[in-house]
Image 1 (tube, rainbow, N blue to C red):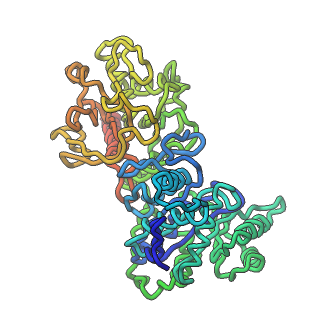
Image 2: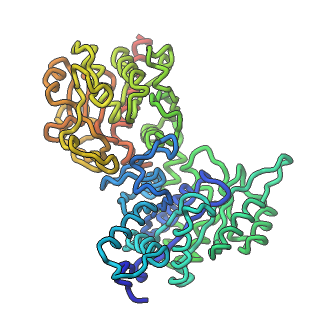
Image 3: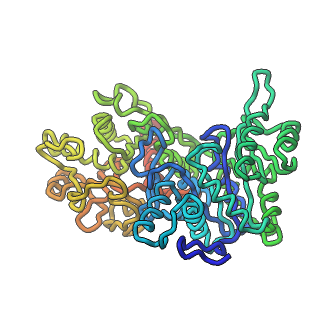
Length: 549
């Protein structure tokens, strides 16, 4: 098929594609299933990438409330995307770009801009072919140069928002050879009151999928336990797939065990056989077992971390949770993360931090819960409690220090208190004339220079680091000298922009203007998080020595 100039769509790009859809309900674990499949293919020697399709009308996730959609994940190029791309980066150990996230808003915006520019030469612009061609183009361009591209379609089959994307996938399959396309459908298999695994939701979901022209090649049943043999046979019979194509994805204690679970089910071997890749895979003895070795590693102790934030939702801070787990894997300890609502700390910690080994204050926006975050900073500073402040947590540590050590009454961030007499945190100069909110912050990867002989130098083991940012405010340069004269150390800088702070003579008091959690991986933990746990372990060792003495 020739390239169509009005859409710049080239159907010859790409190689092997796995499309992952979901049915019955959202939040089933399509992303983890897809990422786990990719991890197993990578273990077998293939170069795997991923695309996340989000059918919402937003151009990106940057303006979305974490209560509704979970964490806004930031990519190295500054793309603000769905949290599932974070799972792909962590499971596949790759760096993705904004091109790997396809949204309805992005597609329609591009097509309408082309129409306004006259690029369609008088044609009537329609869902088919113009929208569907743009979707296919984006998927193929993201897949180019890789062995396998896994494409997750967000939402649930039957959602009106997802229809153009599913139609694009139907066309995609029509254009490709059978051995180059694989459709995986993830669905819920609930229990009845008498303990029977029920297949009817799966049957209805597949019926909905088939009604729009898509036949799944693989069915993955999400259930509390493995699917019974009878359940698999019934699903196969009513959904028109072989029994060998029905796989279990039961609940596990840790999402990093999902690749091990589906590997035991034989999902990777079936996928490689269907995509005609089995002959190209590494022999089993030569495959990478690093993932299994890492996530099944024994721990020698445990630590309790208080995550002090305002969103009572784990998905809002998923990268921080995962970064703490990665650091735990590296230091050999199990990390227990305790949620502490920052609004509850507004009048002091009230004992909630008494039995905690360390505190993390994450990023965020807005005034709600701010006083509690400041209180957590102060408690950690005054009680030698290991502390890690991220973005807003970095800024509030500066505010707390300015108030209670430097003595600047009313010091605050201009974001929270525009009339503060001491705006120790102020708007970035390049932000003053901006009107649009979406995609206009300081975003993506930026390099930070690190001062030698500091804790930051010890943490990173280098004189620079490159981390991802997402902020509009910074430490006000007018207050830097006074803060440092009072004992606060800014050990990482980008020109005159403060990026890292620390306190000498403290077990571990560390703040970053950037978000190190976005680059943390299993087997490659984020240095500030590792430093936090090492600070806790060192402090515990000192306390133990004092008790013995």
